[in-house]
Image (cartoon, rainbow, N blue to C red; front, side):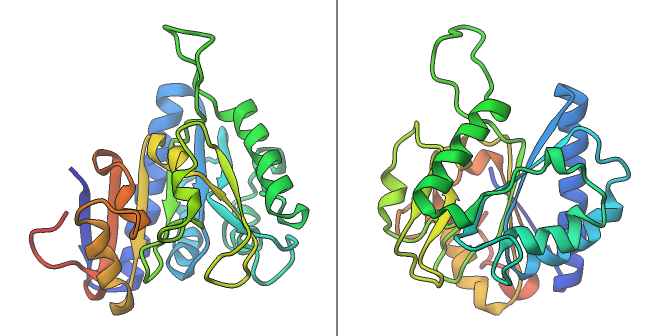
Length: 246
């Protein structure tokens, strides 16, 4: 069952999201000694990251990943990395060796290949019953925004990337309906095997998307394809779905 929590306004929503992320990190470190956290862009995540700096006292053992990135340099105004660096990574003094940036300036295909290799190296969860079997990268927590069209990361409605298969890790996007057209994104498979996804939304413009995400799964609403049992949705009143959903 999806955990749905609603707050009065955007500030309270971001504050709760920061607490949830901090708790998820602490749980992962307690259980496995390391926490793999993936970040997204967007206005609600931005405020969440600012509050997260103080929500977690100790950032040791936290590996930072990204759910998606635009194919731009790290100092570009459209870079998700730049936003995360300004709001969280630098203020929290997170060790640069534990920050895994999607190298957008390599382009979608090469950037995706490099990131998939990095995830395999650092975030794979070997199968104890079959050591030679395929083991996907398992992230402890992925913080996601949602677009008005129901997209998450850079997985857009009806896109071929949604059919990439269970072994896909990271994908290049060349025709994003939102500019810029070239992007890098985690695959749906990686989102689905994550130990938890946290979906954040504020504002009336996201209400229909949240309602659709909590309705029947469909490739027309990528957010609806997330695994409900491991999904936490945090919204403000304006973005809250009708009663009965979630």
